[in-house]
Amino acid sequence: MRWSVLTIALALGACASGLDERSTEERKADWAAQNVYPANYRAELLAYLRTYLNDPTGVREAGIAEPALRPAGLGERYIVCVRFNPKREGGRYAGAKEHLVIYVGGKLDRYVEAAGESCKAATYAAFPELERLTR
Image 1 (cartoon, rainbow, N blue to C red):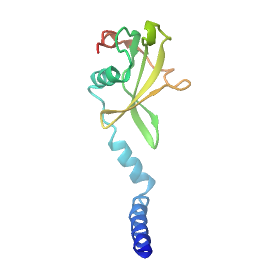
Image 2: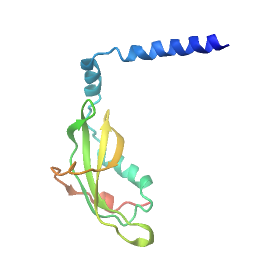
Image 3: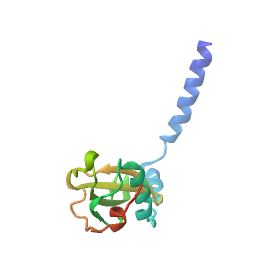
Image 4: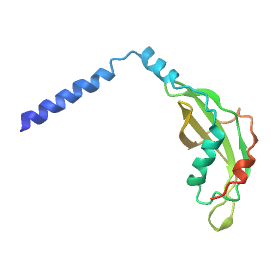
């Protein structure tokens, strides 16, 4: 029994090591191939925020930047900066915050709070659809 478990573990390890044999150039090429402009980025983001926000109604000061290729991981990804002031519990507002929305293959992949000056160079346009969001 022990030997069969060890044999399976070694076999799986050998299979996994095959993935690491790709060159950095091959991995970068795969990464770059996933850079597809997110044509429906606004609609996808609205659908995500409708479920992500505790109360998606009454959002204020909403702004969004156009998708732009920015450094991420092994290369670049289409990233959208979005900022808004959501309603908190009790109907209070905590202030506008910026978030990064990362797209892979033209689809929303990650949504994270912007750190530091990640969105400093972003040119925001009004995002009235977010301010009109309903449950």
